[in-house]
Image 1 (cartoon, one colour):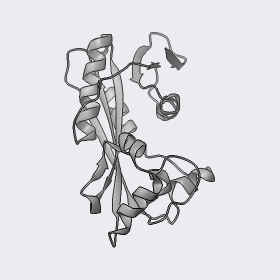
Image 2 (cartoon, one colour):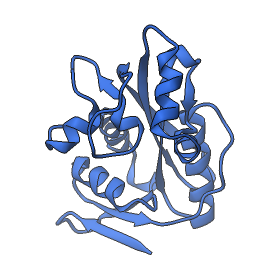
Image 3 (tube, rainbow, N blue to C red):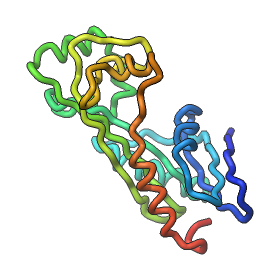
Length: 200
């Protein structure tokens, strides 16, 4: 299954964003401003990449998908790194949130005086048979001792972005949260440097 978003230009090149998350594809599309491109969502099963780095996971996933599909692809990976917990849960957040409840997270955080943390977003672009190019950004903040807000996942109810007093969930509740997207714009700048013959 796939979703296509097109710009009104002839002879467009296609870029395939590999994700099963429709909302993630829509957000990527809303940030994508390179003219003459056709964005296509590809819902492809990617093997779990065992690594502690979102950069490595995004890169290996993109390379796998590009080779399997024989298409130019983009793949994103996200992790939450809590410094007082040694970087836990890192890129394993999705799995950890299936095992731990909000109460479990709050107990872990209560054992530390300060809980600086950051979200790490890595997006990788890969062509078939080529090494992926990865772009990463970090969203700094702290972990609250008590969950606040309704929207989003467990970590959204606990993470307070830098220079904010509200959790991500509280901001989502009021449609006031702007997700980090600078890594997408770094990717777009790179795509503009590619010659047409190198992109199929």
